[in-house]
Amino acid sequence: MTQQARSPHAANRIATGNATPPNYDRTVVACFNGYVTQAVVNNFLPLLFVTLSTSLHMSLTELSGLITVNFITQLIVDVLAGKYVDRIGYKRCIVAAHVCAAVGLVSLGILPQHVADPYAALLTSIFLYAIGGGLIEVMVSPIVEACPTRHKAQAMSLLHSFYCWGQLATVGVSTLFFAVFGIDAWPYLACLWALIPLAGIVMFAKAPMPEIIPEGVEHMRTGTLLRKPLFYLLFVMMLCAGAAEQGMAQWASAFAETGLGVSKTIGDLAGPAAFALTMALSRTLYGIIGRKINLRICIAGSAVLCVAMYLLAALSPMPILGLLGCAFTGFTVGIMWPGTFSLAAERMPGGGTLMFALFAVAGDLGCSAGPAVVGLVASANNGNLHSGLLAGTLFAVGLLICTALLGRSRKVARS
Image (cartoon, rainbow, N blue to C red; front, side, top):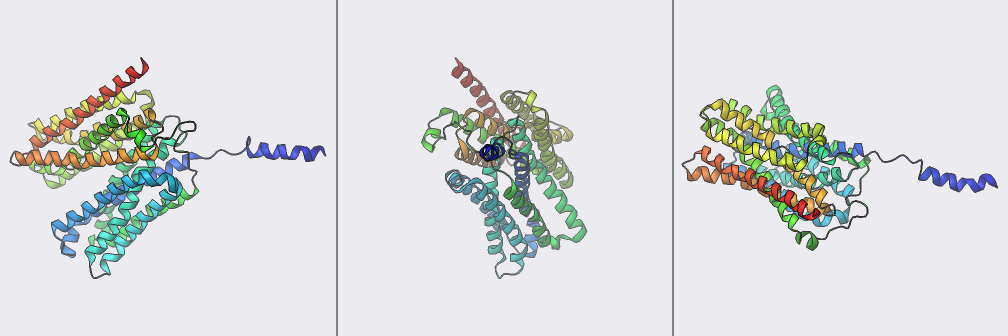
């Protein structure tokens, strides 16, 4: 009798008090792998543009169309994800995202060589993996933010560093593969890269998924979110962060070659490759020691240094200093994007997937607007990229102004 009476209590104690808590470290690691997946789908195909142009007889217009399809698809997915991901469920969507990325990469390696219209096959492949890339971009940040880590801003910065490391790995491993097996073996490499999202499927399938909206926090609806002035301030910050980052990244190679007079090889190494490396280092460094630094002040200081690096690149009479300006701009912009995400999650914890999706849209718009402004200003000045980069400083200045307004809004809220 006594033993029977105790059994339910013991079972309840085992089910509640002594149950092993979920291991969210596995979830965070899966998110890191997710950003490597996005880096692969965004950076592998551009390495093949010259090969596609010669072997499949594609024009520059057709190649540009491939980039446009990738960007537009991810942008549409960003918008739709904010509306539907919460309804469908995070685990289902993040696994589906990796399935799309894997299928897209495998079809990239197989279809163009075996169909009558290779261009249509490329577009289909890009459309598939762009769906995966767009979903991954929207979802991994709120997942990491929702995991019960002690230092969320540092975890977010470390997460975004994996995109940079993934970008470097994509370029480095692909270059080594082509050197060993030849550029004509690229379809095999496309299929091999699909192993990254396939690993993500397994990792997310076994990883616990946290509650995206903290317990006790009201979930903001679209109307509530859009009525908050703070949302628009952070939206502009995301736009400026993306513009400051890509305004230099997209033009670094061309600027080094034409504006500074160095060879293309040196220009690529000292331009976009060094930019990605320093950006990865800054995000990793903040992920390690960032808990000792005020995030808003860190973003403001990075904006000031970003202006200085843009000016160094644009105004330096010595090529070596100009190259250093290009490279270290990556270090200064590293914290801007993930840092703004973390500030948004801290200041508007009920924003959820919708908020992160809209900020992803803002960042993508900035990534498009930044290089466009630099290019347009340069074109208006007879192709002088020095003047274009001078115009690019406006985005960092805009971010600096926003961080000042953000600090003032907190002081007003506390008074």
